[in-house]
Image 1 (tube, protein in one colour):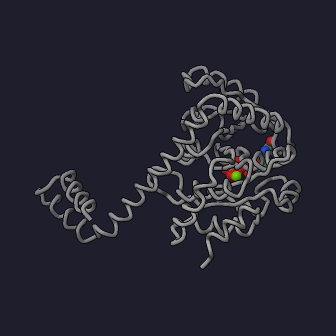
Image 2 (cartoon, rainbow, N blue to C red):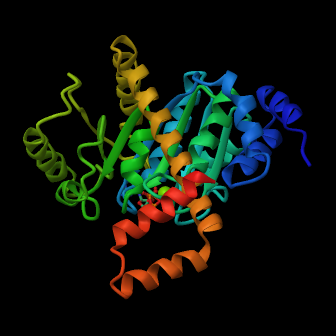
Image 3 (cartoon, protein in one colour):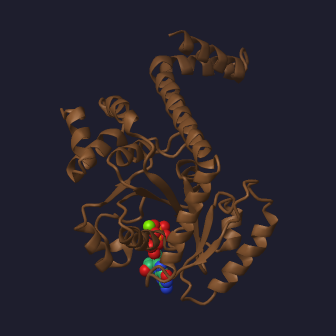
Length: 317
Ligand SMILES: Nc1nc2c(ncn2[C@@H]2O[C@H](COP(=O)(O)OP(=O)(O)OP(=O)(O)O)[C@@H](O)[C@H]2O)c(=O)[nH]1
Ligand SMILES: [Mg+2]
């Protein structure tokens, strides 16, 4: 059994091995998860969290990789969490730019980790916020979270991040598809990547038109559109400038504090609901559930009343 306090001490000294161990402990429902969370609580709130999302293949990993270089060039350290990467992040191939990646992998102020999202009711895997807490406590200045923009995950990343970057590209993941998927609303910054390809201007134009129709998130922040060709690094410095500008804006308004409170709220909610689900499964058991189902199919009980009965039995335990 790992000594949690010692691991945290070592993680706070920037020891990569200890950081990796801690993430493994909190990523799933390990017996030490609570202890890690309890001991990390005092070290929270330093890292700036940037969510990077968009449809498969738009260039999230390539952009993330390029951003790592740009952020490092300003002297800041970077942690990266890749949620459900379609190929393993650690190998470097997925990052498109292998050379850039190799240079990161020898840089101890960069930490990259892939996480699998495990379907949890209504929330991004609760392992992600916990892994974020580890990187925060370890002192990373910026944490980038890449999630693939299909299904619910990209909407959840918005509740995790201080700044949410939504990436689009000509072809797959264009503005119309993004609008349909509901991911335009969550953006603090739009990136039109693959600007070296034909069609990028059309994506940007469509985006601007659709943006006008989204009545806005009443915050007073005008969502900028940044064009990049992440594979060559074009536009990346500008993207980082815009991210930093958004951070400054959030900090100067009350938004940052408010976002972080909402983030904590959804984290607590996910943990509580997960706990209810777990207890429901263990204390109710298939026997009682089946018995209730018999009553319902026989017409002696309606499903709401049956659920109420099971829930009150659960809450009484
Ligand atoms: N032409 C061009 N291709 C790019 C650019 N950025 C990324 N790509 C290519 O697009 C493909 C997908 O890039 P990724 O960075 O893996 O995209 P992703 O969004 O992370 O993909 P998933 O994680 O699988 O959803 C790769 O072949 C990249 O080389 C760009 O600026 N221009
Ligand atoms: Mg990727």
